[in-house]
Image 1 (cartoon, chains in turn orange, purple):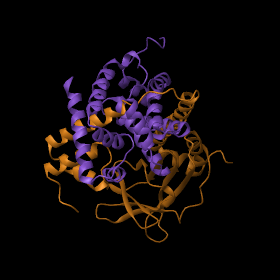
Image 2 (cartoon, one colour):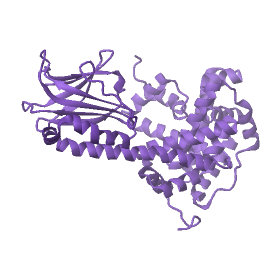
Image 3 (tube, rainbow over the protein chains, first blue to last red):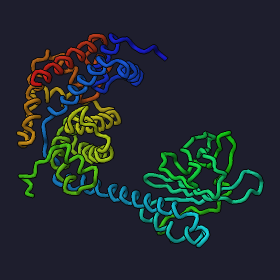
Length: 234
Length: 187
């Protein structure tokens, strides 16, 4: 690791950073410097503005006749996807509120087969899983579910049964053994959900870890019924 | 509202694009696609490749629209910088040396077609910058154009022009400092 550059070095490199042609290392060094040096930061902003303004000098050209239509068509698709993902998020949140009651009334199976599939179809999801959450002891009781939904974006949704009033960290364990803390489940809410940039295909386990670092509940790919499907595929 | 009289700011159209407003999206694309295509074509010299860059540029603009920070610059240059980065990525994939277009463009000077009315302010600034670019010594102009448009690093330019690396770095820096000064004049 190089020492952080002086103002002089940062200014020598600033033009190349502004033009986007500095090496990654140089760029990182200059950015680290300007994060703490207001005059150099201002200098870099002004040079970047000049570098960007230069691009406006490129002559306008009439694009091929159908390009505008193709661009708009491509923009329409992801917008639909995002709207669908938002709808899915809202539906999942609504379900979370009533999850406990719904469990008792209908059983997870029926729920899964019905509305969950609807949600997935709506958001054009490509894969999902439902993993039971269990206490880590052998033969531990099922005490909730983890719902996994792979799409744009991917979702993880955890519903636990009656907890012991403690907050849990939600920790993902990936196939290469990496542990990633995704968030915290508050003690008064027995559900937690979030979008994630994790590739869910690499997710092996999801752990609820208490403040002492003990695993309170765990769900794993190995212990789950094969629930992967494509919405509308049946 | 008729197309001719509908003149919201670039920022307003971008906000519309981000929120999924179809009319704003179409207006945004219409406002920028000639500029984006012109830049991509200048860099790549190929209509198909330039069209791909245009499509990808608008997709990225849409994805990042909500993160756009107007305090850091105007919408136009931001959109163009996205297009430039995509085009430079394409260039690097092709390992194709784009020196001729740069030279041709420099010789002819950036002319372009007259921009629409809403570009009046931007045009004044562009004119200022254009003049400053024209006043640069040729070797500085080449260096800064190769860097800004074609993503050529100082080392690549030094090999291309057979001049020491330090000299190229100085040329790039001097050129950009002068261009910055030119932009400050009218503020």
